[in-house]
Length: 436
Image 1 (cartoon, rainbow, N blue to C red):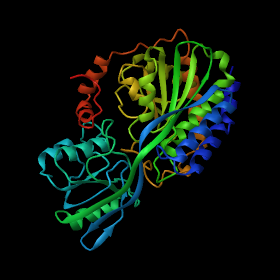
Image 2: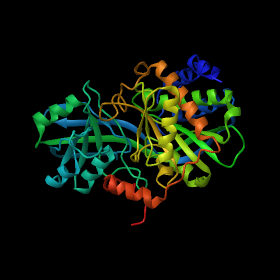
Image 3: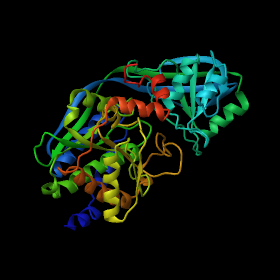
Image 4: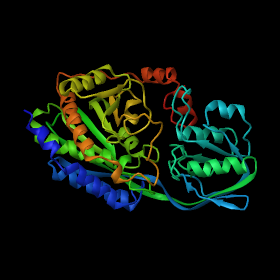
């Protein structure tokens, strides 16, 4: 009964696939590298025994970076463009809004200014403020440009997309700067005219989702998901090579436990997550939600040793995680709140049961993620194996016929978004899907 655990602890399948992904290089949404990563993931799933491994292509708004710059006084400051920034050059006074909380925008006149905000939030903030929310507060208040300052030290400018589903290219030029460059800009040039310039090629592109299956041919299915794309400035080991490696490792383990599966398990590695959850939104728009009994979305795994599962108010999902944690006498953190980011969300927003599977962290934000430092040596193979054991058993548990996770209504999800103070941010970023 437990021989499979030893197999997982000695398996190199997931780690080998992680190395394959990071060695591809640029996996930006719509790039040749992203398509190569999708094909490699399909092949890896097929190699471990998953059936009907296939690629599904879809069109996206392509964006390829050129040069970007900040000219302040007689100096040139290092920066990188935020994906889907418009290709534009603006000159305006620099205003440092610190954390860039909604109240900061309300209290400051930024009309016609270039606004700089930090990538973190203070301890007293009620909730996390996403980069795109800060960007669109700047847009709504008339800013001419946007500078996103990393809070993590180490001369690491952060990336991360702007744009909305309706308008994929943002409205004002946006760049990321390191913590150190941000401090220099604020100290020496706040209130002065600075120039922000972004060059980018905006074009049509194609992305791919990867699908494969194990278990009985039931109408109902458990989705085990991740995303294969990454930002073009790094290897994307943490975000989200590790998540896709986990999907392959879980498929390898579950292929050996296929007789234990009472419900079909569908593995999906999405494309174009980093530019607005495009691949998962495409899947959610064309598949039958009522046949999905649970989603196990891996995005942020293996950053630390202990799993952290956001359960989105589904009590049965929390209970399932606690069952597995008790079985192995191993901690699993559960967070019952909503998390409207990553590839579970195009489904969960309509009440489909889903986890966002991450790792615990005491830090705010992504750490090395979305920077040049998102590289393979940040990851411990031991953590991948330990978490794979727990997640394998969690998927088998969720696939049992007698484990029923009741869907929630969209109205209940919308009410929770309001109660958890998440609705304001979703409205300003164009992500609020409900009729007003």
